[in-house]
Image 1 (cartoon, rainbow, N blue to C red):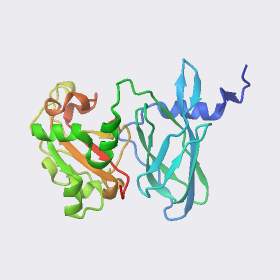
Image 2: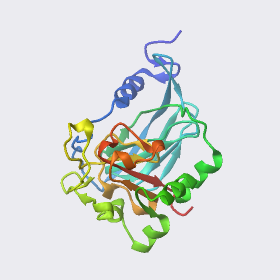
Image 3: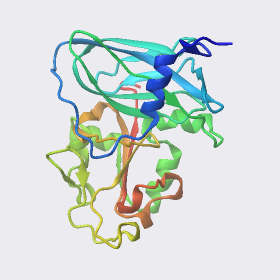
Image 4: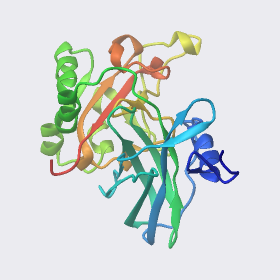
Length: 265
């Protein structure tokens, strides 16, 4: 029997916070304002849901800050801590084999440790180890297959390096007609000729975003994804051109898929 302060070893306040974070943040949500350039740290727990209410810590999950490329590994209690970072807006991705990756934005407060608690969901489909390893270097063999169909627009790691891009924004600007929303930092199709039945026939503009195959459900500026962390990018201008394995409920107006890598590998 467990006390009021924990559920299967997971602190109760962390459970409540993680449950709240599991709800999708509106895509148009504004970022919190935060002082940048000051010492900061990030710490938290990673867990999976077991049954209707209990949580189980996820050990050996990789927590990577895509801005600084710093990595932490969760311990037996699912805890992690990232130090040596600066305050400001950061993009964090959490991966573990057998679970769907999660990416989220977090504002790190200056001169203190910011809490970040996340729930991972089991990956239902059978994963191929070779394919997962390949994804880190060039988007994987599935990326090559999709590129050969010609249904979308594609950028490889070699092309990113040739362009000497600094961020995903530099890579995407002008790709397949994409333009930049200078208020949110997100990309959109200004004159997309395709219409969305889900939008009552209105003209589409804002594509869905996948990061390593996982839907991003918060406002994410493309300049927040450093080019050094990108393995490959795919852009599809309409739901009809999105491959079945990449389809998500928000892809009625097209889709951008970004595949990341560990710099130097």
